[in-house]
Length: 232
Image (cartoon, rainbow, N blue to C red; front, side, top):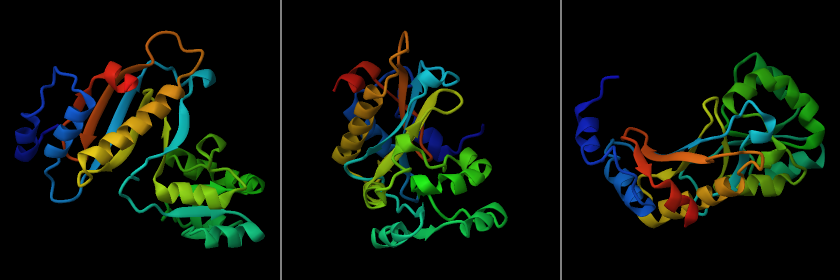
């Protein structure tokens, strides 16, 4: 992959053989975020899990103390009084069966998170082929299948993010923007790592977290010292 001059210049500041302490890595990821827009800062965690086995799946959600810096659009599937409750709580879109053809046939996907009450999962299940591959299916582990739609919406709007293994057993999570202060990024990073640490599958033998990399949208990857990050 051919890289631009700006990327190559910023990459020179990163020692590819080093694993940086958290605060050093945060400082460096901000300095290497030199695009003309406010880049997203992401954490990439390579695990020793085998996601093909259900007992080694790592999936959950955590509320980042300083949010992600992104405005999150929430769609809620509900009925009866729960529709009114979702609207009052600040959901961007609410509805039921009538939304199925809009999503299935018209390709409407102008939302970032889907919340559903348990009694609507039969309806939402029909959208599995559309929402599943995009990581948008509501899930009890992520707190997006719940009768408490008010709390779900409040948490999501406050900065709740979902983490899960991809096909390569890596977790990719945004923890803020390049415009965030070092302290806010470090706080968000540590909150995420604490949640990941607690989510270690009990059946896993061997090393759980193999590597942690911080990067901005357009910047180089910066390795973080795993032992220190998991112990702080």
